[in-house]
Length: 290
Ligand SMILES: [Zn+2]
Image (tube, rainbow, N blue to C red; front, top):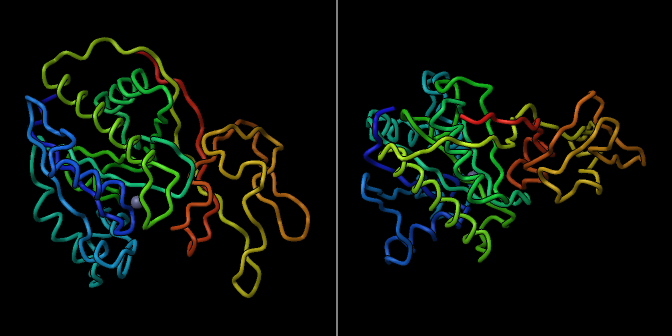
């Protein structure tokens, strides 16, 4: 792989997620180092108007606006315009890695979200997992790079760092620490990759996104179930066949009915309120040593 000579560190893609915004502040005040010897690092705010507003977005979710299909449609909202400007400004830069910093209300600890299974990413997962065993490595590789809706996929290379739990619009010490720790290892990895110093990687466990779980609604559009109390706050813990996912208001549960184990995450993420997504599901797989 060719060397990466620039890292673009993005925060405020969702305007009410403060961890990344404050990590950029630490960088500006030289309280955290994001530079290494083989590449330069610069900071950008994804959606400055949403940050100003302390809201996730103004018209629509910027972090769902970057699929090729979305871009071909003629839409005019604030975030659609912003996505077009972003692509003009950043998408054609070669040898650049975009790191998009997010936090979630779900109890996901430090999660590295990787959107493809090329060796650059699987080795990054191994590098992080070896040094930060508490990290979750989550692959969302069901879509091609062009179909991915996320801001970090506008160029050739991109990843998402997601930390939680933290209420939107608030800032917690421990989530900021998790973000700093994971970002440092990612930057170290890029440096070592550039220097051809990445050694053979050992096998590790990673999660692979499979589907969302939506809460059933009644005719008035209100929910008739909640996340089951057994799994509330227990992101990335196993749910076995026959175990409950949701508890209905009528007193019976809704179970996981397929014949393999599943790992819920983004459990009760508050931003998924309007789409009534209760959680996302993933399978656990071993990534073999390379
Ligand atoms: Zn976010």
